[in-house]
Image (tube, rainbow over all chains, first blue to last red; front, side, top):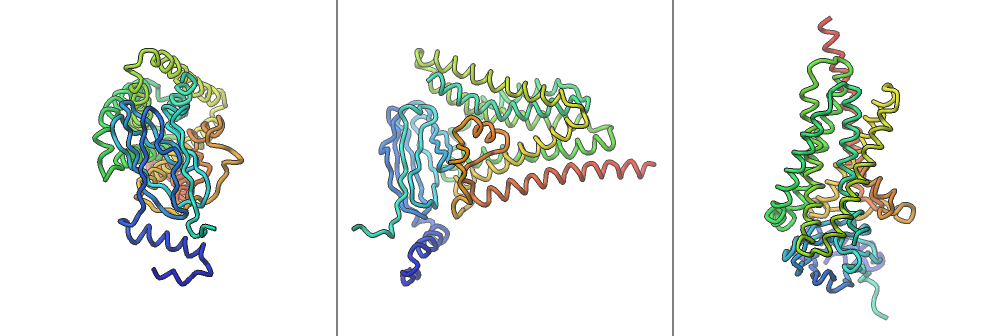
Length: 122
Length: 265
């Protein structure tokens, strides 16, 4: 994409790129899946790219309803038993964003880890 | 389990209870009677049952974000109704005649919608434990305690307002209505962001270290003014804009009312 030659301002470029991606082509939005089983999130740690809007698809495999909730992500959504829910998250700066099932907060716990993809592996 | 039920139900009850108590306090000063409150609560409970049942088909609408859109619509509608109430309170003050039935109808609708949305979530939560008898005793007792605390806070706010001299109580009630209304519209905006109907560039600030949304005060402020530790710019703009609109509605209502009186004279 056009911003590739803006390597000097990679962070800024990444942000612009993420914004462009998010607005210009919805089809390119990364998708991530989560499952609720026996009031547990699987996986309970989810890695997502920084400064990018992503689509979370959460399947509730239990028969009981659950509420996906995160204060850090500002998200809150009821997922009825045996149903799936779509929650859009981001764009977010790198960091850890805990989430939980409000109806079973002792067990249904998880974290979304937002990673800066521009940081090359050492 | 028990404590969790208390918190969940309290959170849901608190918002509707706050709105109801501020409305009740203002009807007292406007001498409107309060039978509408019973009608509103009953309608809200019926609405909650209906909405709870409809949530499954509704959630599937709009590519899976129907729940957000419906909740946002309910909240924007509540905002509009509170705005209309504030407008009519302004008119009632300047020319006290003929507005009572409309005011009561608007308050009834606003409270019924708030109870519908909050009540549906409580019903869905409790329904999840229907089958499990051992769980249900804890959930049932916890929910009852949560509901009672929520109502108690409402009653406390009502009496705090009513205890004030009326020249102070009405402005305080109006400011509370303004904050509640702005909280409604900014929460609705947040739902539209969650549904990806509005794109944001991320949070404008983050005050979670200073005041967590999970804390008791955070929860109370969330219910009262839609407090959010890391809001997007558009949420802040909608919140501020809503306060300006509702405040303007009051002053317009007051000036229109007095204008009519002047013409009659």
